[in-house]
Length: 401
Image (cartoon, rainbow, N blue to C red):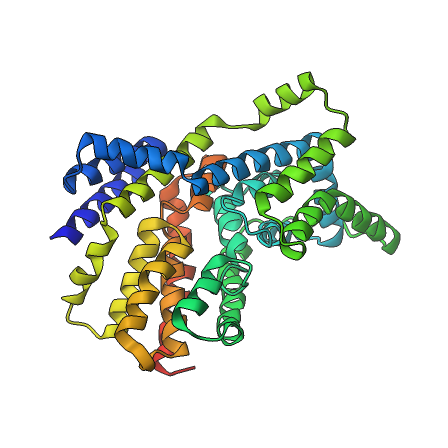
């Protein structure tokens, strides 16, 4: 019965989002309804809101998003984005390739909500018309996450290895093909977009374009180097690059104030806060913990129960760390020594599919909001590749591939 309450709230959220209700109010309303259904007093609910607000993860996320907004605006204002796009157009003649490469490249930077960084670039690459907002949203969101399936830079892969007890190199080797599969499964949608061929350039011009691309992407390359090689936190890395750019381009306090007013979108920050409040209420009411008993009554094999549970938690939270942290301890406790690599891979891919189809996934929220797309149409584009990927993972488990 307790699990059904959570499902009712989630279905209501989905219905409201499909009717294009604003996500921020929907999530706050969902938080209130969840608290009521789980008999939470007003005082306790306000305590949850306060804990979510002062949570270091929330503060860090809002700080990262703010710094990303400033960096993105600076790169556009000072001509870096234009150089990057000119370079890509000189190196690759097909704009569809350019559109996919941009979020894939920026996806190497493991920051929450990083899709807001690549979205303006994808928009510029598709600026000549003929590409719908939903298609731009799909490309930006989908191709941003190809690395997250196997790169240990992302916490989900590391957490899965630690909780399952499987050696990290073995898990990476087993998951890496799914990163390639994601790229291939997205191609049918990518290639159906209107093509636009750039004019062929000579070797000399291509060298100039390559230099422009390097110059335009240098701030991003520095962020990547600081976060991936120097192991500096993403927020600090982005903030450092922003500070250097502000000094280089001589921003005085007045100019900086105008930059902040133009770059920082308060609506987006409030939206993210609303999502974090909902997740806090999910944790404090222990609503997610009611799912395993509900699923345990289903007359289906255990591996399907684990896969469905992982998918559902991923969809309910939109977080990789959440489905790994909730599902993998249950699998480990249930399977013991029988837990093997094929089952871990299947459950991992199932949970990731849930996060990719979740209306709470921050990258999806920010992308749809940026392009002013219809979330229903974006979901229709996502469902095919994501379900195909999970089906391949299921077959991989059944045939121990």
